[in-house]
Length: 291
Image (cartoon, rainbow, N blue to C red; front, side, top):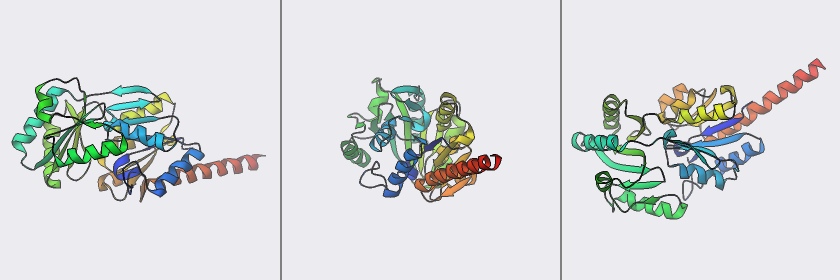
């Protein structure tokens, strides 16, 4: 039986959302209700700040909230922080210096703090203005009143969850990914979260660690877990679960790793419900045959 489903957010559960990312499509919202009725536990594991996962689960009626943010750098279990793996300031500064001096294809940089802070290269950056509006609508996080350079100049007591870097082409993103992975392999973990986006975090942080935590804490076997994702920062989760689902709209590499490809997160959740129902019928038939 599948006892637990873990889903990525962007490109997966957030696919087709409404006014804000927390306003899920009618299909995904209905599927979340269905898995609750079926008695299947649910967790969100995202590259985003942990606040999005927590708010999402509260909004859609989950009383027991276990979630991961920043690609596993932070873990949350019913009011307790079970993992906090910050990116070191020294490493952060070295990476930003390299990107600025050697990567003319770099378009944007953003630092995200463990407590849902956002820091941009300038206070009037278009992304900063957009996220101020999003923070006001969702109640999640804040855009800080200092820049990336000002943050690096002085320790402000803020722990870095991740650094996001966006490039002007997939080729540039791929080249920088290989460069940083080679040079900083023992200091940070780098994910390709999109064709042009890199997410850089603590070297000991990835989403697979959150699944390992759930398995150990709640005594789960791989066959009792299902995972839904769309990009390569979800790949580490796939090695921890037997039932793996990749979005058809996402990474082709992840699709090759998955047991199933789906059009929506709802399709994957409903497959899990049907799988459990079929197993239950088989057990009942076996019991009847023995009787």
